Structure formats: structure tokens, C-alpha cells
Image (cartoon, rainbow, N blue to C red; front, side, top):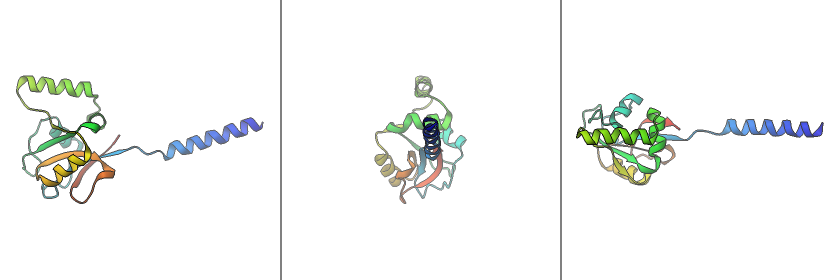
Amino acid sequence: MRFFHCLALVAVWLTLASGCARAATLAVIVHPSSGVDSLSREETSHLFLGRIKHLPSGTPAVVLDTTSLRADFYRALVNREMNEINAYWARLKFSGRTQPPEQIEDAESVLRRVASERGTIGYIDATRVDKRVRVVLLLEY
């Protein structure tokens, strides 16, 4: 009987611990003077998939991919794996229609770049956001 009591306590503890686990969040960020206060998931996907070239404010967009977060970002944004995203960009590049977002190695570099260039849009872990940038969309992954 004591064994089952301990087993039940462990099960309750595991349930509570897993309930406390929280998904990580990515923040899509822009320069504070970009003229953009928020973006929908659809607008964001159009920007990051090269379908539109300007922010909603009319400012030409410079789109940045954070290399270390890329797979999580596209899975959270459009529910696609990297092989699908890479194939998509290969087709577009081959046709000469557009170029993929610029690859930036780390979140700090993306943060600095977005903070210094008005039309730049990128994404970083939400815990890294500071007052130099404006968050326009949050994505849990």
C-alpha cells in the first residue's frame, strides 16, 4: 500500500511540475521609429517569406533571420520545418524573384542591427528584448 501511495505522490508532483513548464517565446522586433506598432502573424509571414517588401508603414523592410532560432521561428510562425523553408527559398532564388532574409548568427547582433536601422525587422528570444526595439509580435514555441 505504501508503494502505491508514493507512486501517487510522484505522479501528482510530475503533473504539477509539467504544468509549470512554460513554452519559450520569440519576439519579432522592429526599430521604435519604424512606424509599426504591431503585426499580425500573416503580415509577419509575408515579410519573412519575401511576399511583401515593405513594413505596413511603407518603410522598405530589411528582414533578418537569427540563425540559432530559425527552425523554431518558422515552426512557430508558419508550422513548417527547415527543409520546407529551404526548398521554398531555393525555388524563389532560382526563379530570380526574391532573396531570403539575411542570416545573422546571434540574437545580440540582430538586436543591435534592428536598434540601429529604421526598416529592419528580426526576431530574438523574448527575454533579450530591451528598450532599444519595439516588439510587434510574440510567438510561443
